[in-house]
Amino acid sequence: MNATPLSSSHKALIRALIYPIQFSKTPGDEVERVARDVLPHAGAKASPQEYATAINAALSSPEHLSKLLPQPHSEETVREYLAKLEACFEP
Image 1: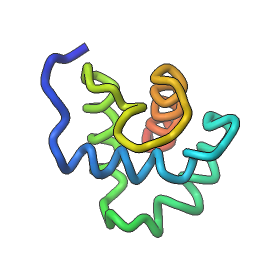
Image 2: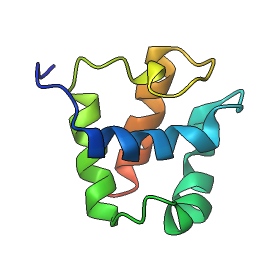
Image 3: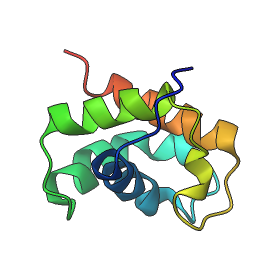
Image 4: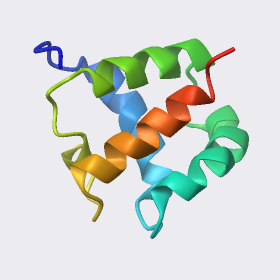
């Protein structure tokens, strides 16, 4: 993992990605829904490339991603969800 902390803009984008799954029992199962229904309308108004960059930075960061937004999921669950979501941005 990279020792570089996440920038505030990357944290904002990661929060926007965690928000729609915070009450889901199985966040990994929500990836398609988030990619299809949430990202195009997300309040952060970021491009797909900006989301992909933020996810990449987050996954390589030592930051406790599960603590960026109050929610019940473990760090492992949040990271697995983000990794699956990252795959949606690959060509």
